[in-house]
Length: 217
Image (cartoon, rainbow, N blue to C red; front, side, top):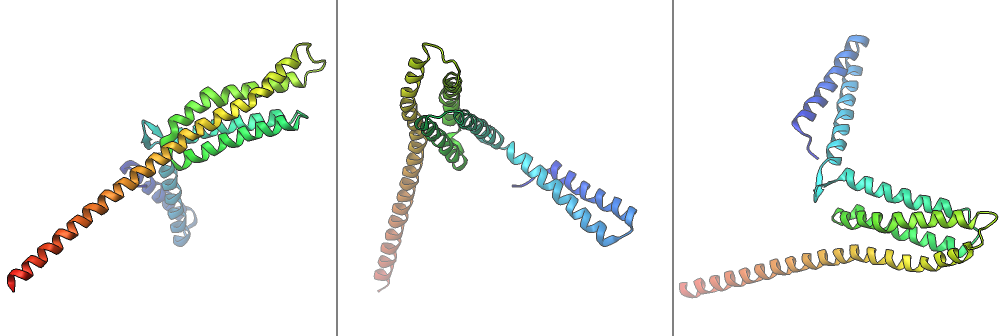
């Protein structure tokens, strides 16, 4: 990405400053030159990353917003995995792992297509965060000793709800995939339109050429 004018100036000045300081201290032109170039390169890369993170991609969202959203989601799935390590119920552990994988696959899709940022942010707020709380509470209750008298019924209800939660997660992922299908369909239509226009244009040119040849004869 191209740097702003101020960033380019700062990087050049930084490189020149490193060069001048090293030349003054060690009196070695080659070493000072290499250090100056490295100083310029490091500052350039720093500003390049910073400006890229602050670049608006869509709907006011930047690369930094996307990275923060993914990081937040991964922290939640990590917390769910950490929580169920205390359980002995293998079926529950597997179901929670499935939920984490679905969520993380959505984050992978977001990396490829930032336009889905709204869907993912809503997914995290309305589905993943509540699910994280449910799992943590479930583990706390399931590992409490002695277990409260009415805990068994609550635990069983929570276990049954995991399948419904999984279905809801998949529905949210389907929204992202539907957007991809729509984008692909749009690309195909644009291509077909361009191809038809080119074909029509070529046919007209061929006919025009034939008419000119016929008239000359």
